[in-house]
Amino acid sequence: MTDISAFPTITSDIVKHIGVTFTATAASALKAGMAVEFAASGEDFKVTAAVNGGPVIGVVGAPHASGDVVTVYSLGSIIKVANADDAATGDAGDYVETNDNAVGGTVSVAAVAATGGATATFHGNILGKLMGDMAASGTAYCLITLGALTQANSS
Image 1 (cartoon, rainbow, N blue to C red):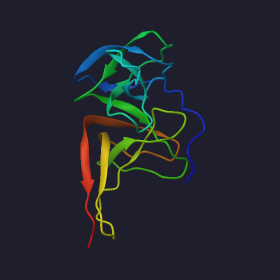
Image 2 (tube, rainbow, N blue to C red):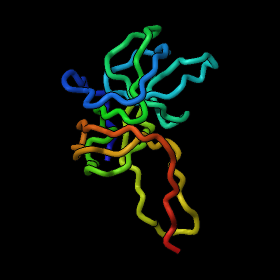
Image 3 (spheres, helix red, strand yellow):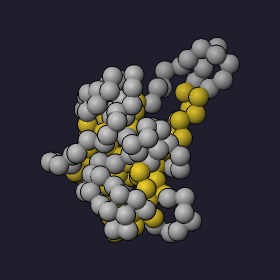
Image 4 (cartoon, rainbow, N blue to C red):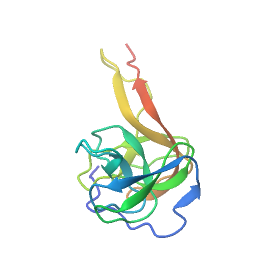
């Protein structure tokens, strides 16, 4: 499994359903379908592409330059997101979380099945649930739920 090297250009039917939205200022250039988090700049309502750092807060629905006012689609919205990986796939109903891919704004499937070992795994940047299958290097609609989950150990 390898991270994708560029965020895909999503141009059609990006927003399927509008839930909660709010406006913010782009701290960096953003592409349509990028998951976003608050920028670490300490400024109110400033967002940047999520890289599994700060808590994810939604997805942008259009491309924007740094400094633009952007609409962030959040809770209850159904919007296309991009797979961080060129080999892994996702299925409808899978939880997705932000990914540390250097291109920013991508998601990956969050493992929820119990694993071996002595400790549980915390997934603190859950964006939501896939509404359809997500191909490797592909896009899929995601129902934005936001949250966190703990993957249990099997011992």
